[in-house]
Length: 244
Image (cartoon, rainbow, N blue to C red; front, top):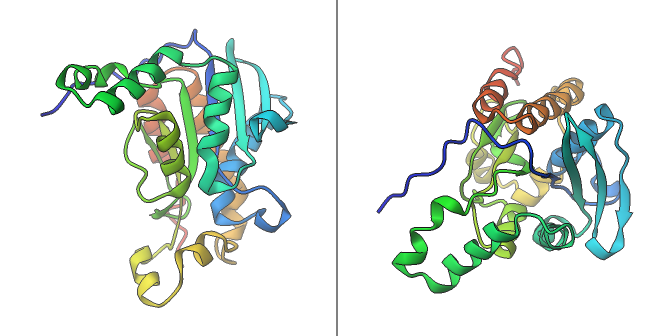
């Protein structure tokens, strides 16, 4: 059985927005592939004159302000990647964001009844965007998705576990090998953890700052309310001449 979903292209811009960058805290993890979500959100904050403040009760760093007239909260979980959902759900509760949608999502998952399943199209967190690294997308490419599975990403898995829904937008920032599938790297014996916690290659490094800025541009477009336009921009911002 399939369900229709609301049109994603025009996001209501009057409501408060939450933008989450995923990564690991600490110097050890800075500039690694797994922290590209952190870097994009930091760049977005800087462009808009916002500063982060550590909020111990939320296990996160938070920046707040009005961007394009939209009350916006930027979140960097300090829980480490595999527990990102803890910081996200604490922040949602603290700021009382999307309360009705989250209640519906919990009800759908708990009851599993056909009547509850009919509510799935309504359980859509339009105003929460998660920025995350993606090993299955080549380095430098961006994909903006309305919703979807975790794709095996532990940070997304934990968010889904805590908020009880996959129905929230995510910006996937490609950190995968340029000319081969990551599965081929696995066959060569490179563990997933080593790859995502590793530094960018010498070929990639000159492009990292621009890649981060591109991510921030897509976040800005999404925030201003046109999902389709933001998704199209994500598809256009890439490094076609970059080869390994």
